[in-house]
Image 1 (spheres, one colour):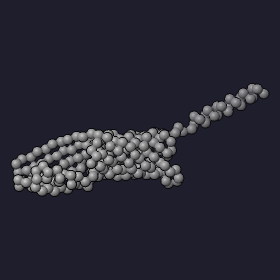
Image 2 (spheres, helix red, strand yellow):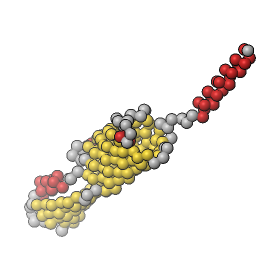
Image 3 (tube, helix red, strand yellow):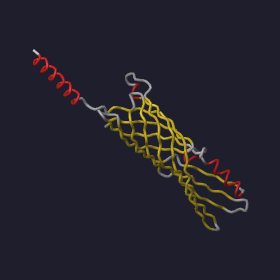
Image 4 (cartoon, helix red, strand yellow):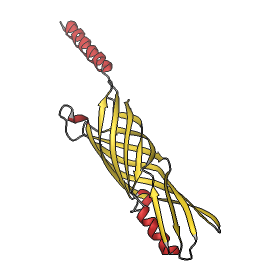
Length: 216
């Protein structure tokens, strides 16, 4: 009887072991990429003011509506409510053009090209775990971006150009939706707002993007 009992126990343990081995390991790590459209806050009033303060006269400027933006990211799911995510973002140049007449009656014109890139770290929150709503997320965190600017000015007396880089901390927050496309793949839609880009409190951006995430 003891032999049968031992055999039964051994078979049960073996089955439990095989069952555990056959279970799929939870996919708590994900990687993704997204592309979208970034729009910097309007800088025309600031530029006009700086130009007229510097050379007098009058000035006018216009800013394009936005530029392409790209982001690579990865995260760890701590539980079904929260994930920690690290990303790297890069935007194309956005351009502001200006022209004016100085107090000495000299015509001038030029442009500024601006872009930013760098790392961000944040939390992705799924606060509601009801059907459909469980795919809605809120994200918020901090950025370490570098703002790159290149300015060019032309006058009847000649031309001048200057570049400037500025790095610093900022913050972001946003709302998104992860649409399941399979057992391990989601299509991500997101809308984010960024403050203090490159540490400049006056520089803000809104970013709408579409991406794909894959869990491992």
